[in-house]
Image (cartoon, rainbow, N blue to C red; front, side, top):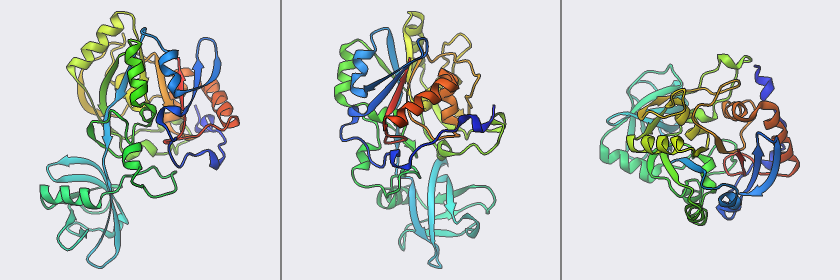
Amino acid sequence: MKISDFDYTLPQELIAQYPADVRSQSRMLVLNRERQTIEDRHFCDLPEILDESYFLVVNDSRVFKARLYGKKQTGAQVEVFLVRRQKGLEWVALLRPSARIKKGDRVYFDEELYVTAIDNPGEAERVIAFASEKAEGQVIGKYGKLPLPPYIKRDAGESDDDRYQTVYAAQLGSVAAPTAGLHFDDDVLRRLDGRGIAIEKLTLHVGPGTFKPVTVENIEDHSVDPEFASLSDKTAATINDRKKAGQKLAAVGTTSIRTLEAFAHDDGLLVPNEKMVDLFIYPPYRYKAVEAIITNFHLPRTSLLMLVAAFCGREFLLSAYEHAVEQNYRFYSYGDCMLIL
C-alpha cells in the first residue's frame, strides 16, 4: 500500500488546542465493523454502549516533564528532550541544535545544575548524563516542562499537568500521553464497574517516535521506533482467563493495542513480558488479541492511522474521518475519540 492511501483533509481549526471542559463530555464516533454503521455519541455513553461481555485494557504510563531548556557555556540556548533512561544517570535525549554539542560539552540550567553529552554528534538521538541522582531530580523537577505535541501551538500551562495525564496514570516514563485514555473520569470508571466491565492495566512508555511521520511511499519500508512495554504475569493470566470465558477485549489506545498484539500468540492469548516493542501494524495485518478499540483521531499519513485502518478497513475508516470533519469533531491529542466494535 502507498502512503497516499492514508491521507485526508483536515481544517486546522479542528485541531484541539485545549481539552474538553469535562473529560467524559468529549464526543465519540461509534463504528460498527459488521454493520458498517457510524453513530455520533459522547464518551460518557461508554458504560451504556458496552456490557459485561467486554473488558477494557488501558495503558497506565504517566507523562514526565521531559522538555528542558538550558544554555552552553557560550550562552547559546539548547533544548534537551529526554526520551528514556538508558542506565544509571545516562539518558537517551534529543538535543537541539545537536550538531553543536560535542562529547564532553555541558548544558547548564543554572550555575550548579547541568547535563553532559557523553557521545559525539551523529545520530538523531544522543546520550547525556546527569551529575548525580539529586541533580537529576532537581533539573527535571525545577526546569522540566510537560512536552505537549507539536500540533498544539502553545506552551504547556498549569492545567496541562492534570489534563495531559489519564486519571489512572501511575508508571512514570512517557513523553506523550496515551491520549485515548484522557476521556475517562471517575464517574465513567464508577459506572463501568457498576456494569461489570473490568479494566486491566499494562504499561507502554510513549516515546517521541509516536509523532514520527511516514516518509516512504511504500509503507512496508517504514519502521516505528521501539518503546518500552510491560505486561505482568498476573495481568496476562487475568486477560487470558477472560478471553477463554468468552469476553471480548477492548483496547484503549494505540499503545495498548501494540503492546497486546506484540505479546499475543496466534490464538490471541497473551504471554507476560517486559521488552522494547516496535511492532508496525498496517493493512492487511490480522489482529490476534484485540476485538474492539477506543482511539483518538490521528494525523494523516501516520503509522497510528494505519494501525486503526488495519482493524476496521481503510475505506470505512476514512469515511468515518470525513464524517467527523463534516460534524466538526475535535482532532488529535486533546480532541474527540472513536469506539470501534
